[in-house]
Image (cartoon, rainbow, N blue to C red):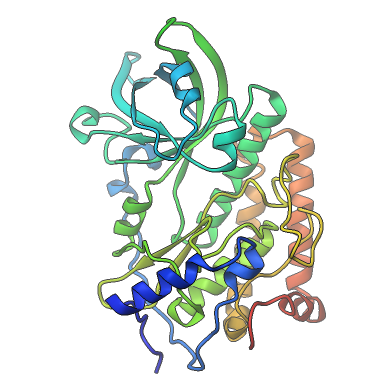
Amino acid sequence: MRTPPRFATLTLVVCALATLALPSSAHARQEAKPKAKKPDSLKVKAPRADTTRPPLFTSEAPLAVTFTTNMRQLRGDRSQESPYRSATLSYVGADGKTVTVPIRAKTHGIWRLKNCDFPPVRLNIDNKEAKGTLFHDLQKPKMVNVCKDRDNYEQLVLQEMQLYRIYQTVTPISHRVRVLKVTYQDSASGKPVATRYGFLFEDPDEMADRLGGRMMKVKGAGPDDLDPERSAVTYLFQYLIGNTDFSFNGLHNGELISRPDGSPLLPVAYDFDFSGAVNAPYATVDPRLSVKRVRDRLYRGYCVLKPEVPAAVEVFKKKKDAIIALYRDDVGKLLDEKIARETIDYIEDFYNTIGNERDLNGMLRGCVGPG
């Protein structure tokens, strides 16, 4: 039998202290010493039915919204400790009338917070204020904005949004997203600043609640603390999109959901703009990794999870047509045609790898830790 996740008080302290000493590279962050016992599978609670989803996530159609706040003030908030600012979100309802919801917004992030003209923001939406609107039951979702008011940067946002849609296609243990056409309006001048595509994605705590758990806040989880089947799917997804900029051990671009019954932790990936599938001009690869280009793939799953990989491969094979179709539906058509074709080719290359036993074994040689 699998040893259950051991996060008693003493262990939490030890893990937290140990994590402080971990290097910042994705390679070093993930090299936790695995335990010898092989984990069992986990039955995950089914996601809520569409009828009980927050209204915003009952459709994938792009939603035109106006985000109004003091833009100069918000752009000046470059600290992780920046306060929430007053703002509103508006859209045109089914009856043709404008619906305006008062909210609060604060900047967040690391690279984008320092380098973008339109930093990503976390929204704080009061359910009483949002009752009867599309923004009801969202709590504190994140809004991913275009970094700069340029067409190529808008395409980067749409490319990343597509990766969230792929992730949702292969597993419900992922963030829901909705593409937005955002008009940024300055409350001080009353004038619009820009109109660009962005997207809203599910509040982590709401996602954890949907899956019957809660977000894990302590670093230091090792391979034996993770659900093996779900981890294999997530690591294979990261390989599909060519992403190495994450660590579940260090909670860097990766979240862990704990369950009240002590079941293994569920890993959830997010923040994919440094992936090869997006291929952002600013993206880099940690120099300590064996790959040198963002577009090069490197498998970063734990070696002890190799027995679960074949089942994960079958999940992706069954979902191939649905994944490719995401680039041909109304949302996928927002992408430049050339970019969509290049991304499909990149995805096809992944399927060539997992469809060939020799190439698949070569992929797994990049795994982390002893196996």
